[in-house]
Image 1 (cartoon, helix red, strand yellow):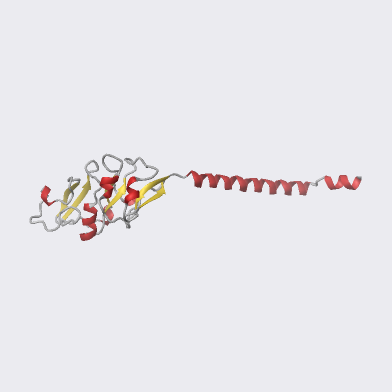
Image 2 (cartoon, one colour):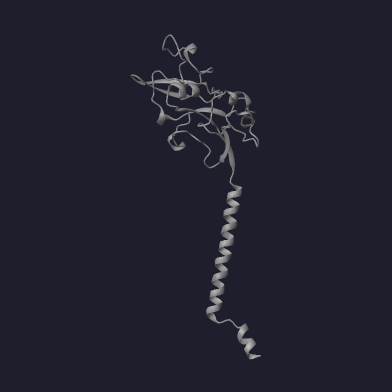
Length: 195
């Protein structure tokens, strides 16, 4: 009987060893659970990939919002500040003026501001932008692609099944993490003014 009692008693070294193993195991299980919970609870939002977008115009017509939540954003660090901006002026204009008939945007949502000869700065007036993509198409055709369409998350209802994503012929809409919601081509969101 004395032998059995010796087997049941733990010496100090075995007790500390088992306690240490148990605490490491419990910590790993807890950490795994926390990481799994965080990865599953991470929110996602809809966003438009400018690399895939073909500027079909459906963002302006298919959004459930009265005015589309898709807006033109200007990536200023990519812009050449051109006098002959392909996103601002219609191709083949007779006179280079800011008259409405010379502007590519159907709602005059792009404001042109003189900087110095021959440079101009272009600002997007969010309230007027309908997300048609005409300026983006012009900028891609005759410029460097600094005008890009993006879902503006201040305006978006983040529908479970985005109405625009369902009909997008280029499959340019995807779910992205809410903590990094913008996908600008050629630059990061930190280097981009949203105006």
